[in-house]
Length: 164
Image 1 (cartoon, rainbow, N blue to C red):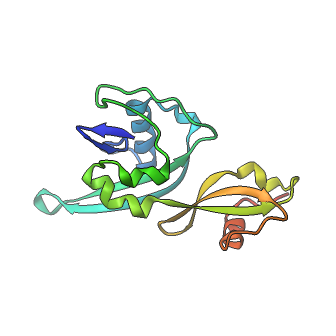
Image 2 (cartoon, rainbow, N blue to C red):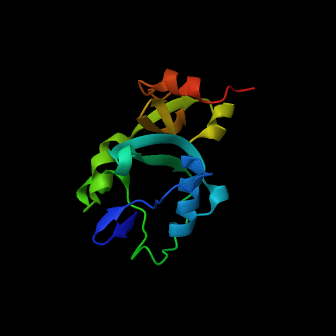
């Protein structure tokens, strides 16, 4: 998260005319936080706000959800006073940028356990964020085959690549 004045928010910025929202988000994460592009895996894109612009134009704010296999080192640039990772369950207690605060509940993930055998090939795709339906995210973790599955286990299984 990056402080914007005294409010915390996410790296972001304007989309260039040739970019997709995903390309913009990855570029901005690199420019503003020093995150390495090849370490990010985009999982979902969600329009979190739309506003009227001048002359009948519309602006949209799009949040891109991405994962990395490990905690990535951040490097603040001139636009950020500080960069730090914050546990998801601590975010709502922080002084958030108003736009980020308004969309935070839609961006939260719920943890979900997917019981898998130790040799199940789907383990290689976890843990990761999965969009189980439009705008609803879970943080899916592999569990042991004898653990109680999440209520979403069948849906999650259907969204993972099938084992060979």
